[in-house]
Amino acid sequence: SERQCPLCGMAGATVELQTVKALLMETALARLQLTHHRFCGEPGCDVVYFDDAGGTFVATDIRVPVWQKQPAGARMICYCFAESESTIRDEMARVGASRAVQRVRAHIEARRCACDVRNPRGACCLGDVIAAVRRAETPGRAGEDESCQSATESAKSRA
Image 1 (tube, rainbow, N blue to C red):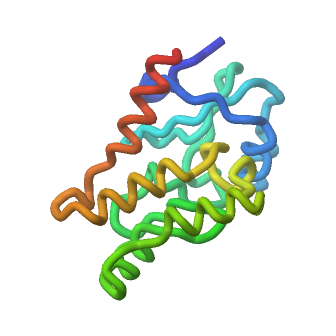
Image 2: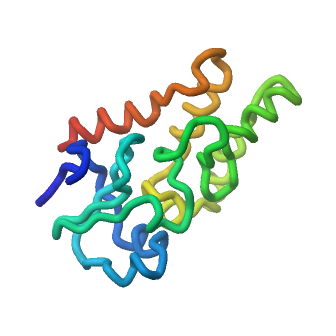
């Protein structure tokens, strides 16, 4: 089966079919093949999902902005509870720290999250939220994306 993104060659993380179905626009959904899909988190690549049959879906095929494909600054990180880079920074400016990680953890513990159908990656966003808070806490790192890079590295090692 195809494990690398056909456009950029990076290893893709497996994503469930229900995630892809939930997030595709109607015209893209009409092209969906019932096969295994993978998520390409490479920021410079237009492909979001690719499948074993050679099909691809790009950012404009997806119902929500895919944060890994967006410029840093105001990206939505938690799709279930609207934690974004800008809300994290605003909270830090207002009260000196962000409690985004604690809020997301509380929602996870209460089983309120729906990452499997809301997050384009189809997985829990907690690690991404932690990384976003760390970036916001460290001056000069706001544009860096170690979470994307670490996700890409771990996907490479799994491939």
